[in-house]
Length: 536
Image 1 (cartoon, rainbow, N blue to C red):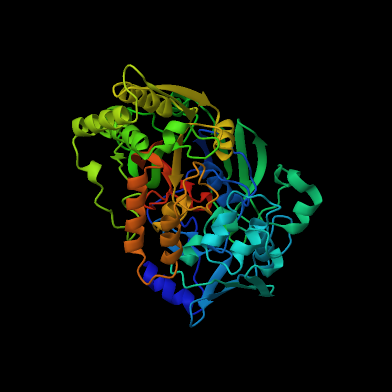
Image 2 (spheres, rainbow, N blue to C red):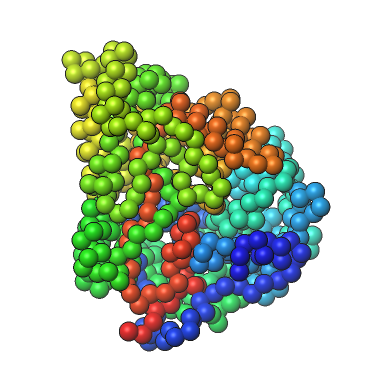
């Protein structure tokens, strides 16, 4: 069903059937419905309001369920909500919750569970890095609640009754329903959290409303899930035993895939052409809404003095040969990037960024010129440290950039660390330059551009621009925000708070008997409840 028709039906408050693991015509289910997949890093938290990781969000979409879900192509389909109504002024959403949704302990899922979760997200006491998300949703009083200027019970959400959840937003936001698919606004069970405190996410204590139960979680080793018999659509859940294995070495993970121990794994940098030739039915490369950058620390107290100079930042960006990175190192269909927002984002218009049109020789020459003007060169090199999290791909890119920068008079020291340490250092501005990537939370340019506002919870480089903030705030009430997004991207290109490097594709090996992997969804949001294994 197309999105426009779906939106029309939902706005009238009508119900739609959920898209679950309905076996396609011609498919015969395999006897074995176990599934094992790869995680690069440990999942820091199973708490929807605390998690910030893409891999963690994948698990949370199975343990919990929000108001809306996404289908195989990224279109909206009902989750806990069967539909919604939108007021004439387009600022009040009334979601109708299904009456057969239950928590895994047997409690009914009610509108109050959403009220509690959304207030919890905004509450300064929670200290969620994603608190800003509810402000981006334009929920009434969100900014004031997050700032501690208003109590959480003044957030613009309420339970009309057990099965009616109302949200008031400050201005029309056409993509608001899409934002409800994000893990940070999933419901949580208040009495379980109050009973167990920080330990509520442990196996045996975690109570979810999703299609799966958390059976085991050994941090940095594995996550094990099995079907939730109380899930409202459990009859369509097919995978019976799911294991996610954390393997920091991507090459080792591929070896285990080829040995039959994994059903899905990321392809290491540079291996896609060979694997596609050898395993044409298993190697895939599809667009994914993520952008890979090197973020500069511009914090006035903690950032390196040299990076305060915009021309130094530009020189560092110009010197990176993106074509070598995507064509010689990654080789998985990734695109060189000179901006922030993924080019395939719906409705996005790319600005005309000057250095994107230059040859690499011209960019390198300009980098040398700018660094020389700032007092740096072969005889007086600029010394910087790059932090990156453990991954062979990140390591190869860092080594390449080290050489690119050496050629223009910069001595860069790569500094590898595990994911948790890396992200903690970024959040505390304890870095000079850091490898970073952002994957869109929904298919609209603001999911990228809001990150570099002063009120963002993820602006770890502490870039601030009043003009940029105003553009992004004004875009929320604009009839057509695209021109504002274009200007915002131009400001990022002019101020260079990061060096853009490439835009993602999902490059993986997937066993050919797996179905329902959501590969046509640009966001690459997948749901275990949609997956199944077919007979050979």
